[in-house]
Image 1: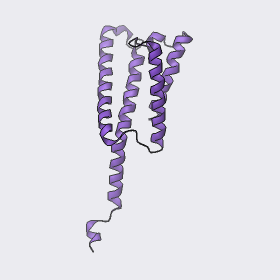
Image 2 (image 1 turned 180 degrees about the vertical axis):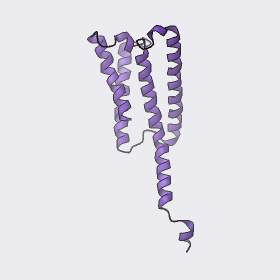
Image 3 (image 1 turned 120 degrees about the vertical axis):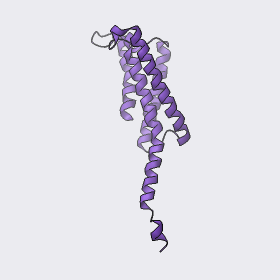
Image 4 (image 1 turned 180 degrees about the horizontal axis):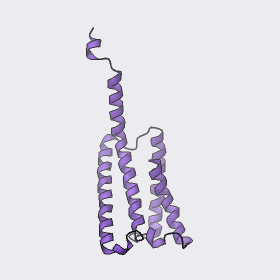
Length: 149
């Protein structure tokens, strides 16, 4: 979870660096920004999402789950649809720009997948913990035969 959060967080200065410094050895700003949203608005959302990812990851590290079981199911479904949508976006993009397979607008798609994966992993947490807790309790309970003797 922390690795995914850090990857997403590092995207923000990486994209800003491409815009401000324009180094020749770094992917050009157009590779980082698809243009679907004005960059100042996108930057604000990226900072907000980064703060939420880091905060939630730190809370997870302390054992505080981000979602209840019911919400986790909805988040998992959203994450799957989100990742699938980015898969469709990738296929369509590559169909229109096959020569730019690795140099084209792949960066935004990859980071959408990072975000979708973070959501999926976070959504799986309550279910994993519930199963582990149930298994732990079952193994520590005395068997029915021993408790009736």
